[in-house]
Image 1 (cartoon, rainbow, N blue to C red):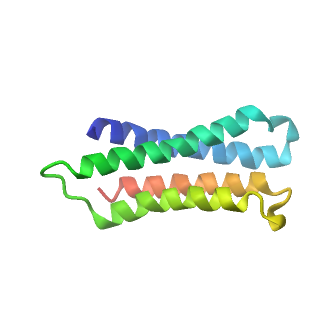
Image 2: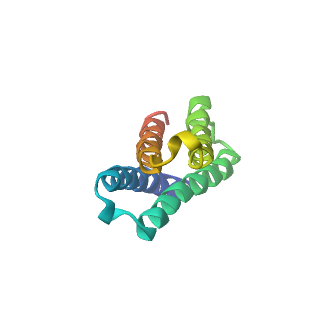
Length: 119
């Protein structure tokens, strides 16, 4: 389980970074927009939930001590996904959804990087 948690941490970081950059570039160049980009965003955000479940299972094992800050950053990523999802249809975000998901993906990447060094 620990190996899954470690591998998925790097997937979470790299996928959210890649999709964050893709969304920001797609804001400028409309040819990059479309279904493949949004499927990538969904996959990147699903890695967060896989990571949380793996972390929760891992933390319940005997001898594993969970750092409170590690849990805080981990669950903050889930909250970030919920906030991104809730803001996507806001009237003031009309036409800026790509910026929302671009910067949101980079923010989640930052949470993942920060969490790596709390262990």
